[in-house]
Amino acid sequence: MKKFLFLALAAGSLSFTACDSKKEDNMEAQGDAIKDAGETKADAMENKADAVRDSADAKGEAVGDQADKMDPAGTTTTTTEVKK
Image (cartoon, rainbow, N blue to C red; front, side, top):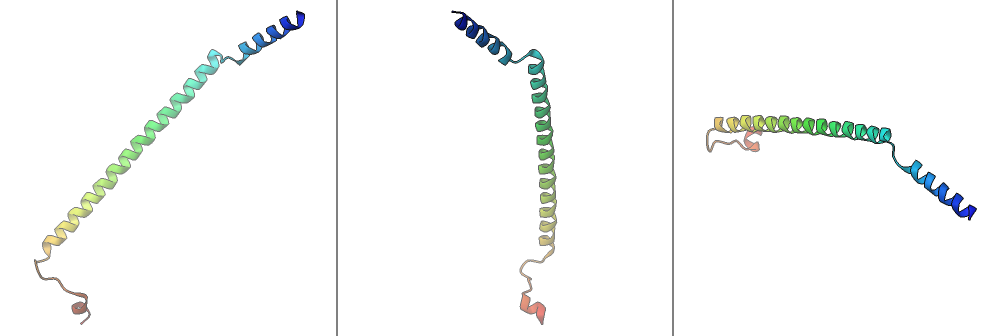
């Protein structure tokens, strides 16, 4: 009976030490908040980068379209004509 009581007390005390403390829970919550803030910042930076790429693509297309308008219709030169 004494062995059983001792084992029961040992198991009970181990179960209490295995539980998270409030301090540990707070630190984990703080770590999660820091990770979430980092993810949010990274997402914002990616969105900015996408906007810059889109703007550059649009400007490049506009310049190309403008160059196409400057070329009179039907007057293209071939590579053989340029070599002569």
